[in-house]
Image (cartoon, rainbow, N blue to C red; front, top):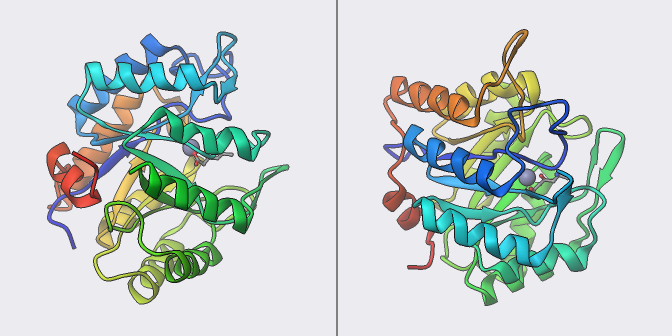
Length: 278
Ligand code: KMH
Ligand code: ZN
């Protein structure tokens, strides 16, 4: 178990609309302001989805490059771009995200029902993402929406080798309608699968969608895991209390981590742990 807790913030996502969630950061200045606040609050990694001028999800290459540059200019955060995008994004655009040269990128380990939609992740596409990340020296965060995704990751690593950085880090995204439940038992089952089936030293984080945020966060901390929080995953701080800012969620995670005697991980330590290129 690491002595400190890696906190990732996922501030925007691709699903919520600014009209419904006014505090959602959708412009570049809003994203940078959020990032600065979240770094101060204890985050080490930022998982980024971007929006276009109408506030809709986009994978536009120039915007992605501008976003990476702006986050590097204003923060020390590890910049992780989403290759998941939104459910309507195609494989070519999702692979091209890596051309923006982030430190990290997400790599979802299987197809999953996603509310009324399907989040499509074919085996061949996963292999392409894994190989391109290694060629581009981008560290993956393997996104796990269901237990079978961990078996798929074991298969990927055995057939195609370790990722760039040679460290395996996964993120359990729980409570998605169509995926694994967001509860302590599921976190424990997945943590056990990581220990049994992934290389020694592999690390996991967990995030719970909506009202599963707190049980998943506490279960992950209790099980030696790391945490992801942010408005991509929940827009309610508590019952009938909308989230005011991403930093509010990061502060709560940092307080919980400190109570668990595993305080928020420093960014330099996170870079070493994950194997981020210097
Ligand atoms: N927006 C979801 C369809 C990722 O960022 O890699 C996919 C997602 C996962 O959020
Ligand atoms: Zn995402």
